[in-house]
Image (cartoon, rainbow, N blue to C red):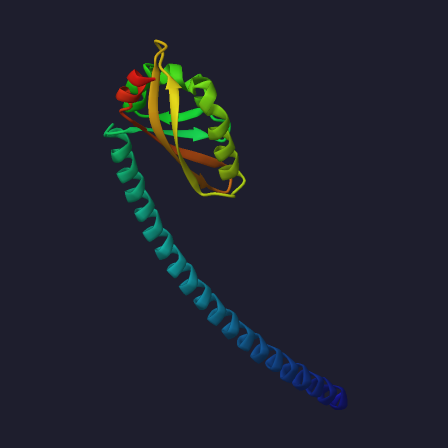
Length: 182
């Protein structure tokens, strides 16, 4: 019996030593995991701070853009890749004689003077194919009452992960003297 007790005591000592060894290994792994967690938390905190900064900058930029957009100093629109009007300022409505609601049901192609359409669409397609970043053309639109509106159009493309949207500026050009000669 004493022999069995010594055997059990010896096995217990071996198991205790083994458990102690595993415990130390577990503690080392836990320390490494804690250090990695701290580093990850620091990176996350830095990323979160950057995201907040970028969000504030984006919001400020967006507000500034919309203020400029709504000042109606020049005609400005945002159009889709399908040539639909997405956003329209009042200067465009005044220039073309349509309400926002009417323009939202149309495309800019429908209002472009036929002789100017091919050149505009050619540039537009190059921009969508990323061959050019922007373009400016002089083109004519047909006003709601039928007269021709002479404009200079600048188009810029902006892309996000889901789709492209296009920012279009129209400035009315005063070609009335040329119009009278022609």
